[in-house]
Amino acid sequence: MTKSKACEARTGNSKPRWNAISEKVQKQVLDLALERTDLSPRALACRYTDENRYFVSESSVCRIWRAADLITSPAPRLPSGASRRLGFPRESWVSLLVHSTEFAS
Image (cartoon, rainbow, N blue to C red):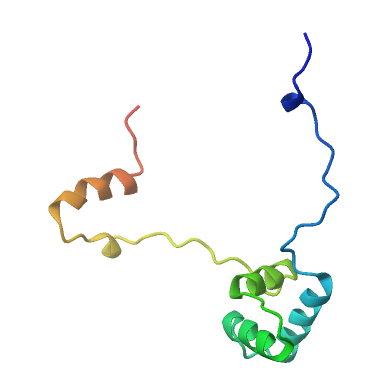
């Protein structure tokens, strides 16, 4: 039997992504972040856009910082018993189902 083209291994596409931020811009964002440690990602993105006339989003700044190990992802927070108090009776079964630790087998 012969393989169809969909099942064959593909070689990597050599074209760069059209919306990728260049290394030069990433370095400039990192340099600005190290220079102005008091700025949040949103404020830094606004300042970079104003000064350099090149738009960089807040999420792009966060991705650049995360790639450079300047920030880490926050640890997931588990709900406590007090935060699970519900106001509507119909929500209580959903809470029990979602937050229970024992499942019937």
